[in-house]
Image 1 (cartoon, one colour):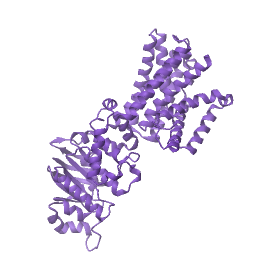
Image 2 (spheres, chains in turn green, purple):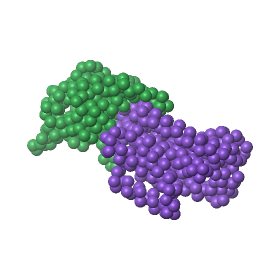
Image 3 (cartoon, helix red, strand yellow):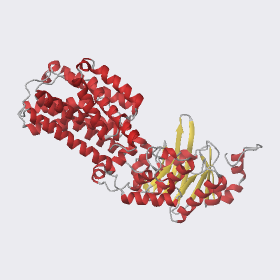
Amino acid sequence: MLACIDLSLAFGGVRAVAGVSLGVGRGELIGLIGPNGAGKTTLLRLLAGTLRPDSGTVWYDARDVTRLPLHRRARLGRVLTHQVVRPFGKMTLAENVMVAAGSRTTRYPWRALLSVDGRRARARALELLERLGIADAADKLAIEVPLGYLKRLQVARALALEPQLLMLDEPLAGLNFTEAARLADEIAALNADGITIVLVEHNLGEVTRIARRLAVLENGTLLADGPPRDVMARSDVREAYLGTGQRGSVGRA
Amino acid sequence: MDYYLSVATFAALNVILAVGLNLISGFCGQVSLGHAAFYGLGAYAAALCAIAGLPFGLSLLAGGLAAGACGAVVAFAAVRVREDFLAIVTMGVGFLFLGAVRKQSWLGAEMGIANIPSPLDRWGYAALATGAALGLVLLSLHVRRSWMGRAFDAVAQDEDAARSIGIDVAGYKITAFLLGTAAAGLAGGIYAHLTQLIVPDAFNFIESISILAMVAIGGLGSTLGVVAGAVLLTLMPELFRVVNEYKLLAYGGLLLFVMRVSPGGLAGLVRRLTGRELP
């Protein structure tokens, strides 16, 4: 469904992603992990289209989308990304999800001018907020709610686009233990509903719990790729995370 | 009577200019410091067409189209640059317009264009300008309620997030500039026929800033607030002779005062007093 071939991008002299090839099949839930600076987020952004690679190609459903603008990708295959929390601050949570739910209506400015009715989009927005457990704050402004709500709002807004493929960049970061477990469960449930998910996450406990496959990046290259248990058992992976002869925190490597 | 009609006509023209700029800056979040250039473009285009013998309606249309087309071209700059840089680019467009017009002998250079045909009487212009202003206000209120308004809002708040939910940011910016500058061009056409004489300096940087002051004092993003701001700033120099002498000082002072007391302008004041959003 999603694939990249020999993808590379350098920032100045630093090779953030160096020749990564990776394929993601329909219905998979793949976790992208690796120590800080390994190139996970860069790879995700390259896959999503917020960054353009120096070389290599990105394929979506057997179509080369490397040069396609971001909004066209979001429409085409509902490929989309989630970076750090970026809600529309001066909109309510419901409105945040609504604008995404109305993405068909806003496709052409002139058509958008002729459409006023937002009831269906609002109903859909409330349904999604309910699903993510944040419907109680539907009419609060996004700048007024805590981070845990915004993290879930991001997922709700992404779902409003009816994605086939969801790319999540650290959706659990900054959440407490209970919140993280709950959102991870919801991500697993979305995957069970048929949405393919690529997940960049530092919370190794949750990611190994819900992912069926892990890809480990180190220094911009793919170090390991396979079922979570096998990957985590590999000595080179442990070394990449912990460093040789050093003790480190695995949870927030 | 003539005096009041003329004040009403200019108030209506300023409403068109300010509501048009509000579409670009208030709704879509794109700073523009060169709005008067499009006012001037419309005036010159309409004047040339009228002198060439085109009927009144067509010359007005030409004014709107010429300004709108140039606005769409400038919007391509807005697609590339943001905020401060866009402010500088649009300011440059204003100076470019002035600089170009002043040097063109076929446009009358510094002396401008005189003897522009004027087919209506004072009542006619007042009715035309008021009607056009009303039409634009209704369109603006509709845009706010429509999906176009929601998309503008998303673009204004966070372009990247807007893209990630499939909104064609470039397309919406161009649309906003097209609508706002075409409105300014229409106002320019009416102005040219009304005064029968246009000179480059009527469309200078200070005029751009005056329009921006109307929008800011009325409340960026609120159509009715901006209407109030435009009417207020038109009447102020007329009501107080002394203000007329120091028009810029008065505008600047009022702008500072409003920004200090109510950063949301008149619309922000209404929101605070009544708890309701002014559309």
